[in-house]
Length: 147
Image 1 (tube, rainbow, N blue to C red):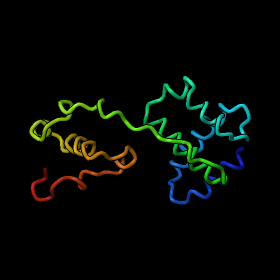
Image 2 (cartoon, rainbow, N blue to C red):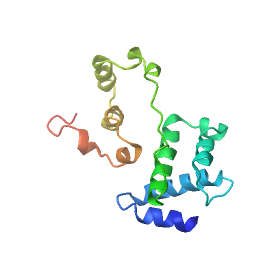
Image 3 (tube, one colour):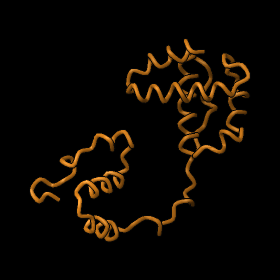
Image 4 (cartoon, rainbow, N blue to C red):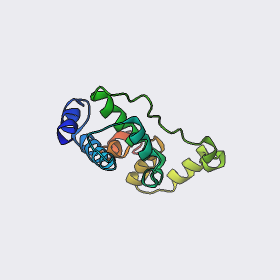
């Protein structure tokens, strides 16, 4: 199994090393649940999606596992189309939970440190954690006003 995973990761040329490690760890965890780690039957994989372990994961984590397993099976030349991601429930996001432009401006205007304002703006843009780690104040602060 390790050889198959290593070969799979070797072909994921667009991924950073940190993403490859995430893929490796997720694949190892997922495949360890299989009775036979070298046997990828559709029914066995679908059964994993029904386990308490899998169902207790956040939806975004479940989708990440599914994405990685789909790519892995595709790489092996096996059927993978049956693995469907989960759509987020639109009812779980209420319009009143989304801050208005005025609320966001009030929040930003009451933050004395540029770094704090920068972090809020970064998260409002929806950057991923790895992207946010690389953001510098100069990337978001207006050079003319220093705000």
